[in-house]
Amino acid sequence: MARAYLDNDFLLFSETARKLFHDTAKNLPIIDYHTHLPPDEVATNQRWENITDLWLGHDHYKWRAMRANGIPESHITGSAPPKEKFRAWAETIPNTLRNPLYDWTHLELRRCFDIDTLLSPKTADKVWEACNERLKDEDFSAQGLLRKFRVDAIGTTDDPTDNLSHHEIANASDCPTKIYPTFRPDKAFFVDRPSLLNPWLNDLDGNIVTFADFLMALKARHNYFHEKGCRLTDHGMRYALSKPCDESKADQILEKVRKGEAANPEETDSFGALIMYHVGQWVSEKDWTMQLHLGPKRNPNTRLFDKLGPDSGFDTVGDWPQGDALLSFLDSLCKLNKLPKTIVYNLNPRDNAVLAAACGSFQEAPIRGKIQFGSGWWFNDTLQGMESQINTLSAIGLLSHFVGMITDSRSFLSFPRHEYFRRLLCNLVGQDVEDGKLPNDERLISKMIGNICYHNAESYFGLPHHSENLLA
Image (cartoon, rainbow, N blue to C red; front, side, top):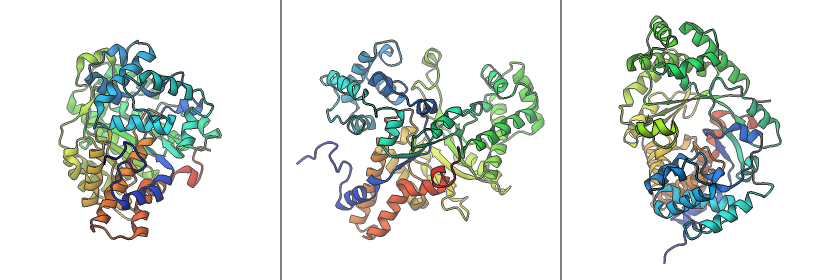
């Protein structure tokens, strides 16, 4: 007899798995240490006029699926009325079977809106009305959703030029979730795009002429972020930048860029590598954590990139060698005894074993799991992708010290994805117990599950609500 979809034991296929989830994982709070949630929406306790604004406004996962379903751009990122965009999403949903979007959509409807109807063209108007009615409730707001899902802390993703005032306002409110910033200096590498870099440099510091000026201004912002509670950096790169130029060459590159002349690819990589070499040391000196998101190929669809701009759902999995560059970068900091806590996220699953093993080459006391093979990310935060990441880490490293999943999300409705991860984790481990691959020791196994779901991140990052209030 077929089980009901999304029943109480969804994704839990053994008695041990069910016990692990319901007795341990389900009840733990959430630490979502890497997101793209807008801090201003937490600070202002954002509310939404309709479900389209909340659900479809920034979600390029959904946009990609809608395009694959033949939905016109007018109903995705264009000017179609919100209800028509929602109907287009409802038309798409039945065609997302076996894609995680199908599960996530219905988990979010159930957990956020208490709606157990399957979304389809037939139910679209009913679900539209029910969701919008729920949005009127007093507790349905940015801070209300953080409370509902017992989110202890979230990390945002912030440009070095940000003043972080929204973080301070949010953390001074009665919202129990701590919002902490993450230093992401990706724009500092844009020497191949002077039209983007030069205005950003002027915002950073209007007096930048030499590389030394640039570095001093960037470090000043790093120090400012530290004062405001930041404890992580984040870097999105095709591959680790590991062959820095010398400072005189960096001066030459910067001089050309300030005149509007773009750097070539080799100069761009070497300039970025020099920045990373310094930022990595700052991270170590301040006892922060460095996050490396490796492997995306940005904007391959040049016609639609020119029309719609970045982050519109056209990025894809890159196809570059990863291992040597990562090893060289980590080693350059290790030689100085300034390799910080580091999380490496991999976009191309082909490289899972390469990068997981690379992390193992730089582990060092006293930090357990100092170098992390990070959560299945972006194209890998699927059932298959997260299981693959867990299995690779289990075989090559220590799953017990894994700091758990991230949503990498721009939506306040995404927290049920933690439930999704916790269920599949409990199922994998529970099945191993049932098969005799792991001991049937409830205390031992449940402790590992609890650590992965919550306590490892709590310890690894030293979050403010469990130590000092870093944003006070």
